[in-house]
Structure formats: structure tokens, C-alpha cells
Length: 511
Picture: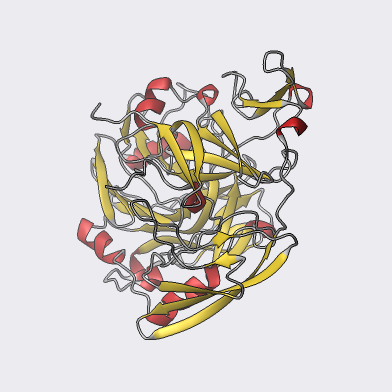
């Protein structure tokens, strides 16, 4: 048995800034028996003026509120609309957008990593505070505990489904198939449950919006990117497509429609070549991660122009874990090194050169040169501003002074929108610092019970070379299924393998 037991994911791996994403799922990419004539409304994010164009030809253009041309962007050959969480930006769905009976299907293609009470879309327009919001249908793609929340409410009772989960690293497709007394829900082609009810959706729409064709044009029956609960944040993410079919899609149709997309070997290699990067390539101060494969199945091998500075070969350690390739040996001066990735899928092979700068090895600091202790912490639960990163300093470890006039040093709006239990780690060479923390904001409305059983499974990470200037935060999901929050993370450095080991505490469902 190896002497070391891996108890958490390696921080080296988590520090990859760019993931190798899967191809965006689009209806055009898959074979389907569904006729285009079945579409009542179809937004591909094609726009003109303040309108999202209904490309179905049925004239159900959505009215854009607050958006600018820069909010529309190109990704993988498709136009997407970026929702920044600004409440002043949303789209109005016109009367007729979901037809006039109880049998229809809404399909939305989106991407978000935010966990909040934000609605991707809703039917109904009357806004208020809880509990005075009534008559609506809504989709929250990722609520505080990480699951999708879909619901329908008449004037009294709300029916919910909270079982689906999205993939935050790519685009997702949520499908809601409506029929009399039932909403069947699917995430990326797979059933995630249903909602049985006794309501009439068209009655709810009429009651909630008073929808009718007027002399000034169609009334509004709902929104994309906006919640009806006024304290709720606006949707934060991207939308690439929004469709409404004029009938209830069956489970088989949904599954067939979102069948697996097969990439050719050339596409797999091209995708890997396009997205493969080395984080902080111009400022290397420690070992780097060299992946040997991609999610799509490409194999990667590595070469280096100077193995005395960057080694790409694995080292076998007897009775211990192996040392992976990517070990960096810093020199007395900065060194430029070219590492080359050879990418292969099937019979297709290509290569990519990545130039990196390995910084000179710093002078070792003597113990006698240290002057202060640094304490990183959060300050309470009074709103999400308290659950951020604060610094304090002490020269004796007993008497502490707040830094930055008592204001937060680092903040996170990712995930739950707050952080707790921070831990700071210095690199072995001494000139790189990592700050990791639990993604959690009790002051933002997350309960202790919810966070323990089904809270965020992510860490928030910052980097710095000098403790003054810090990187933007990034969120990395490390928790396991059936566990709650990733509590109080800490990290150590394994000098034998050159890897960081991150560990934490979580409550699991069977304990």
C-alpha cells in the first residue's frame, strides 16, 4: 500500500484556469424527427434594435430592456446574450409566445455558474415581495444548493421540483414539457422529474399579466432573465437559444433530440489545440500541470526545450506516489522555455507550442527577517460583505490590528456570493501565495441545515505574488455527491511529488 493516501483533489489540478470545454449543444447539431413547423417561438439571439427576433416566423419578437450591443457575443459560431446580473437588463416575452392551450414545451439553452435565487425565465409579470407574489411559472437553473428549482403557483399554492443539476463548465438545455396537469422536466435530455398540478397555465398567464392584444401591440406574459420576487437578483449567465414548441415533447423525443454529439478526430484535436493553455505562462513560479488527455478522448504527450528547467517526464517513487511531469527547477535568472504538446485522436495528430517564462529563484528569507504574523478571516454573517476576506497583522501573535482600514481585502460574487474559513498558504520558494476558502454565504440567506446537507461543493481560490495584489477569484468544485459544504479547507505541500494536497470537512448523507 502506498504511504500516502489521497484524501482530496490536488490544488495543482484545480489551478488550471482554462478547462477543455465540450462543444455547445445546439438543435442543428443533432438528428431529430421534430419539424421546424412545431415551433411557436424561437430566439437564436438574433436581434434588431431592441428586439430579439423570433426566427420561427410567427412574429413573437421579444422586447429587450437595458441591453447594449456589447451584451451580444459570438461563441463557437453562435450568438449568445450575456446576462450580467443587472436587474435593469431582461427580455419581455410577448402574448402568444407559448401558444394558447395547455400543451406546449419550453426549451432554453444557457450557461451559468452562479448559485442564487435568479430566474432564467418566467411566465407571469406581477412583481412583489414574498409572500405576495402569485400566478407564475418559473425556472431557476441553479439555486443556493446547486440544484435546479422549477415551479408553478396559482393564487395560493406553489408546486416545485428541485432535483436537476447543471454542468457549470458548458451550456445546458432545460426542457419543460407542459400538458394538462403535468410539467415534465429534463436536463440535457435526461428526465429530472415532474410537477403534478391542478392549474391551468393559460389561466395563470392571463391572471398574472392580463395578457391581450391591444392597439399598442401584444401584452407581456413573462420574462427572460428576471424574477418576479423584487428582492431576488437578476439572472447571471449566458443564453444561446430559447424555443417554444406547440405540443408536449415526449421523453423519447427529448432524449433523441439531445443525443450524444460525435466529434470527428479532427474536431477533437482542433478543440484541444485551441483550448490547451498553461496558466500564468509568463510568470511561472512553481510546478505546472501537464494533462495527458482531454474529456473528448484526445491523448497528449509533452516535450520541453530545456529539461533542466521544466521536466515533462514522470518520476517513479518507490513505495510512494509518482512525481508527475511538469516539475519546475528555477534558476538564478529568468528562463524562457518552450513546451510542446503533441495531440492525437485516432489517426489525426497535431502539435501546439507554448512559450513560458520561469522566474528566477528568489533569495531565501531568513527567519530573523520576518516581522509580522498575517491573519486572514471573515467577520460575521451580517450580509455578504461580512463573509469576505479580511486581513489583520500582529508582531507578537496576541495583539492584532486590522489592515485596509478594516475593509475587505478580497471579495467573491461567485457561487453563494460569500466566503468563510479562509486558509492562506505560501509556496515552497516563498514568492507565491494561495488563499482558499469555503464558498458559503449564511448572511445571504443560506441556512445552516441546507449548507450542511446540500450546500456548495466548491472552493474559492485567489493567488498573489506579494500579498498586496491578488488575482480575481475562481470557483472550483471539489466536493462529492451526497455531501454538503466544503468546510474549512486547508492545504499542504508534498515535497516528494511536488504537489499540493487540499483537504476539508463535509457532512455526508449516510452519516
